[in-house]
Length: 289
Image (cartoon, rainbow, N blue to C red; front, side, top):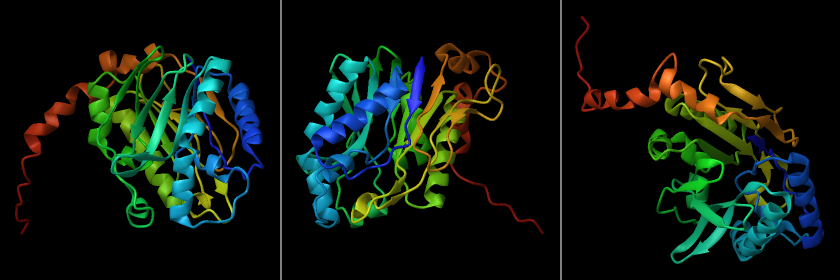
């Protein structure tokens, strides 16, 4: 299976046709079974046409207005190139507000979504966004796929639920403005691969966008992470790009090799997870004189 993790930059393209041309070229360059774009990649739809700065809430609403068009664009690209595509994420309207939604698109044109469950302080306080309501698992021709949108990857129990549901891989679209944030998400993605003995794919937003507060500055490093075990890289990295490089990171992945450590690995993190439960009822404090 060929997987492409795209460290993507949102450009101020002149119109929708230019946006389509850019993304078509990207998916063609990847030529992969699965193409993964970052969190808030859909802000590029809001930027098309070079509008004036409407402020953060204005950008949020403009992106939400164009979310359906963004998804339709990727439905066409998925069918055209025969790829499954995680079309990044972006604002989308629901009954009780605006969520940060990530869309998974199949070559058939079928579309499903995962909303971000745990919002960052910026999304809560500045963007007034609404958290998602459920964790979803996608049964696809490539296997069972879960999505943890950026900050969600920093919470181990979410990944654990996906793994228990049979996830073969977890996709982490991310958007972080400072190196510390990128470190948190990257290290969390690697930890989730170890804990659940599965593949984790991270695709970050990168670069600067003038006069668009939501994506004004982003940094990251695309990567595909695995459990460091028999037959797999000892550092747990299948492939990675350079920091802030927009070159897609593309790797041939053997799902059987990724799954093997769950049955015959050096350690049994996935199988032994429940053994924590008898120790999580409290902490005994003892005096050390």
